[in-house]
Length: 323
Length: 155
Image (tube, rainbow over all chains, first blue to last red; front, side):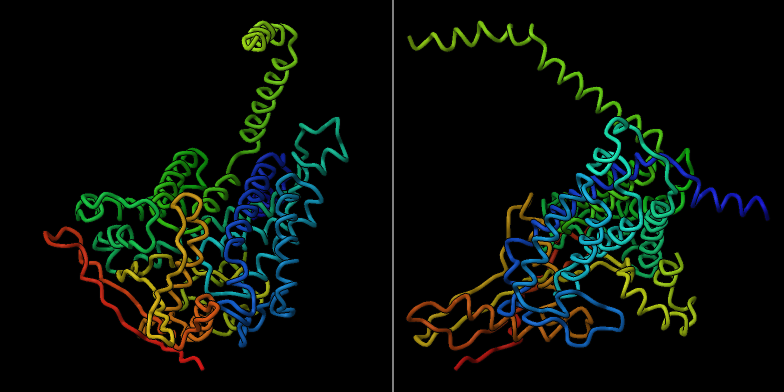
């Protein structure tokens, strides 16, 4: 019993370097910027009183809330949008990270509850990830916050309890197990025709799959069962250290296929971003330091006097040509 | 973690009182979730929405939701694709929201109103076709059918 308790304590609270969390925060920040920009072309149509959803839903289920449900004016929507955009940029660079993550979450929830007809599962996933990010020490490393408080140790990754990151990991696992559960209740998934039907929904297509594949029963059967297998593996084997890299690589491949073939917004991007939480702190630190070494080397090359002088004759020749 | 469990476990496995108590908290935290994309079965009906706008002089224009380029426009389009799923009539489908019809028709009317020409009616039309099972020798879907399902008369 003591061992179980110790393992539980270690899983949630044993401090570990914040390198994977920092990378995860940066990627989610970029996705939030993209998410906000994707709303811009139709912002007036979706969030003004002259658009397709002129008023917020009247009968909100208990607990649902949103700034725009309390203050439905378009001016507030614009202010919230600007706040979302700025906060997403702050989240990306890690400036006032905690505050930025709260603003992003409040804005995402508010927009989603103001016009509920335009969102898909990807938007819901982003909302959930933003919720967990509020509680994580996301600005502890690779951030402006870190630069301001410990400039000389910027490239170090202070250890923190990973419980918020663990919640994201569990969420990832649950997404896949849950979707497999739902799919196993449908005959199309059991008969192997589901991928063909999904791929031929031309109103959803991004880049159409050749019909020789999408209309092939053999291809569909293989891809349908392969999808179920990958999702099941992602739900279970992602917890196995040895299998994890392979399972995540398969998942990333699957989501690349989905992203290229369907217009599903940021679903695949957010899903793959959550995989970063499974990156071990050691691997994440190694990646970050490798990038730093490359940046340093590139910077040194730029400052190298030989490199500058090597350019000079060419420039002089270019400049002298017109004469 | 309890919230994630309650919202994702099959309905029969969570006692109703617990689910009832948990739901407002799930709503408030934004943790309410349901991962049934393309499940239990993917949609097999290809859905398009058109709005036919009739003017006083009898001429008719057609409005369609915007469609962008596949690469970057795809992110914007996802909102419209989802909106169309909710805004077209789909008998027996809980994803169809009739409360969207009137505001949509009014929005289209406002877009099509120009100096000297005002719409007198806007009709929402569903254009749809059903996919046929894969592997057949013939076409892979039925012909498109148009179903006008809502008309807004304007003064």
